Length: 450
Ligand SMILES: Cc1ncc(COP(=O)(O)O)c(C=O)c1O
Image (cartoon, rainbow, N blue to C red; front, side):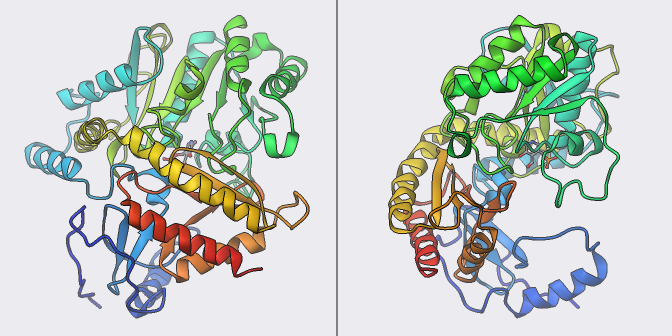
C-alpha cells in the first residue's frame, strides 16, 4: 500500500505551529504501524508511533498532517534544526560529487576539515588529533582502544547511571539493564563502575562525591591498572544528572596524577546543547579524549574521538577506521552544521532556552509535589518525578505525563535509571512561541494529575 504524503519538504520554512488534525497516532500512522509490525523486528521500539514526513525549526510533521512540537530533537541530534539549510545544501553538493571513497583507501578533504574543526572547537589549546566513526558507541569503543594502546593498561572506569551505547563493550559500560543489556551478556571484562555525583540523591559536594569514587577505584581496581576513566559531564540516558561542582575537575586531577586517560563522553552534551560548545567548558574541564556524535552532523550519522596528539597517535597505522567511518556525505553535513552553529550563535540560543524553561519548571515543582528535582543546563533540562513527599521514583506518573504530552502534540522523552525523569532536548532553533506553548502543555499534563 502506498502512502500519499501530505507534506514532502521540511526545514525552517514549515509553519511553526502545533496543529492536531487527528488523534495521536492518526489513521495513516496506525496503518504504517501495522506494516511495521510485520516487517520490523519487535526488538526495535519507538517512543511515539507517529510516522514523520517532514521536520524543521521546532516542529515534526506526521503522515496524517499533524504538526507536533519537537522537544526531543531525535535524542539530541537535530540541534541545528531538522533539514537545516546549510546541512541540506552541503549534503546535496557532496552527494552529487561522490558519496563514498573510504578514507582508509583514498582520502578526501571533508574528513580532514571536520577533524580540524573538532581540534579547534573542543576544550583545551594543546595539539590535538581526531578520528571519525559512524555512531556514538563506536566512538566510545575507539576511545577505549586508544587509551589502552597509549597506557598499555586494561581497566576502564565508568559511572553509575552512565550510558555509552549498545555494542558489546559499550553495553558493558552502560549502567541500566532494561532495555539496554537484558539477555545480551556476557559483556566485555575489565569494566568497573563507581558512584556518580548525584546531588539530589547523595547530598554530597563534588569533592566528597569524587573522593568516594576515587577511593573505590583505588581499592577495587588500583590506579596503576586503569587505562581510562570515561564519564558523561551530564549523565544523559541516566536522567540528566548534573554532577555537583568540582566532581569532574577532581576526577581529572586524579587521572593526571595517575597516568589515566580522562575521557569525556560528550555524545549527548556536545555541540552547543548545554549552552556552551561542550559541557566540559562550564567547569573549565580539559579532557584527554572527548567523544562526540549526535549534534555534530545535523542528523547524519557521524561520530568522533578527539584528543591529545600523543595519545591519539599512539595507535599503530591501520588500527583505527571502518568502511563508512567519516563518510564524505556525513562530513559535509557536519561542516554545514558547524557553520550553522557558528553563524547563528547556537550556544547562546541554548542558554536562552534554559533561561526560559528552568524558571517555569521550578515554578511547576513549587506547585506540584510530584516533581522532586529540576536540573540541567541550557537546552538539556529535566524534571525528576517522585512519589509526593519522598524521593522515591514514580515511573508510572512519568509515563502518564509523557503520554499526555504526546496526545497533545508535544514530543517529550523520558530517561533515568528508574525511568522517572522527563527530559527536554528541543532543537536550538525552536521559536520562543512554540517553546512557550510546549511548556504550557507540559505544565498542564503535570497539574492534571493533581
Ligand atoms: C552519552 C552517550 N554516549 C554514547 C551514546 C551512543 O551513541 P549512539 O546511539 O550513536 O551509538 C549515547 C546515545 O544516546 C549517549 O547519549
